[in-house]
Length: 273
Image 1: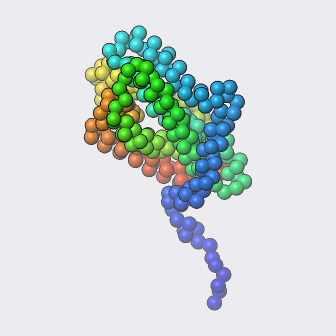
Image 2 (image 1 turned 135 degrees about the horizontal axis):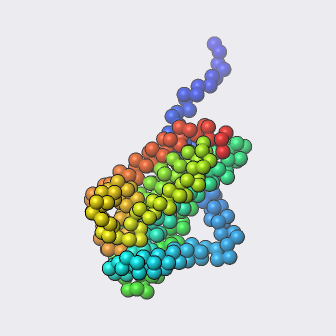
Image 3 (image 1 turned 90 degrees about the vertical axis):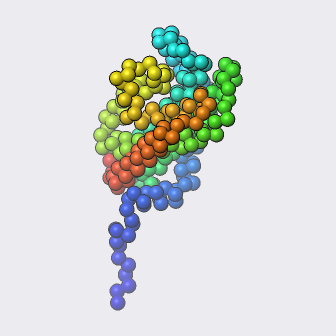
């Protein structure tokens, strides 16, 4: 009887599940990558981590001056409204863009040693979560300075952040898979996400939109996720069940689609980046 083991490629399992198992095996490396991204990002910065605190504040100041003067918003503590939106949006924008860049930069490493292909996108989300946490510090300071209440509904924030992270990871994986095969996707995404920013009520209330455009908010996934983050902090109540259900559906669908697309092409990625 021949006892020589034979290789069965089917025994490796479906890429969708195999990538998840491999990512769990490399969890220690994942932690190191998140830490390394932080060090690399601030190594040449004179302000270091302080820039993470100042950046949203400076953007908030510019947008508050510009839009409150142009549109005359009647919103109490409008800077708080803007900053809550910017913190959530910056997390999404920066993590998706950084995920594509880190996968391309790490391409040479993938050709030399085996790594789960998704580890760069997941580490970008981890780094984004760290920065988001730091960005809450100036938000609290601004609330205290303006006398805006610190509502008990802050307890809902981890749920909102988790759904934002799921959505961002799904989009990051999907766009990373495209960026590997089409180099122009990185530049195109920069333009697209800037347009998406202005089409989402990050710095303006959706009520100023003409009624014929309100339907757009129902098909804009970023709107429900943004409401999930902003409403507990700014208005002090938990979002309605329809908003929560829509945000959960959008986050889950984005993550599943992004994960499936990315893992189905994972074997080709190492040879193309």
